Image 1 (cartoon, rainbow, N blue to C red):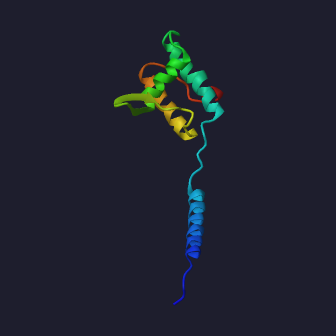
Image 2: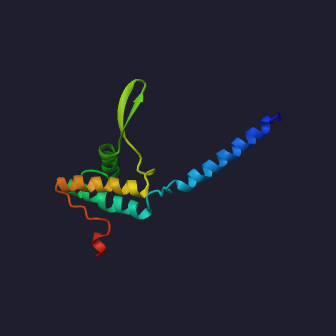
Length: 123
């Protein structure tokens, strides 16, 4: 019976794992972070329209924080106390950020706030 070297088995396993990881990476859809155009539209149109609808009584960061808590809520526990926070928009993909803004636009429409689509003014 032939003796099998442990190092040869380990090398073979490593090579197989490397191949599997490369294959997995090829199959995963690349995740693009939100674009500069999306960010400009969000702050310059979405947030601004909501501020205007409330007679300019809020600052952009206040509306942003409220929107995150409404549409990107996350529950965390600190020292036994449950807290609801708004997740960061900076980590959203372009698709996730558009879904977030779409939800905000739907909420706004239900509340009488007209927020144009991103390219609506360019038609």
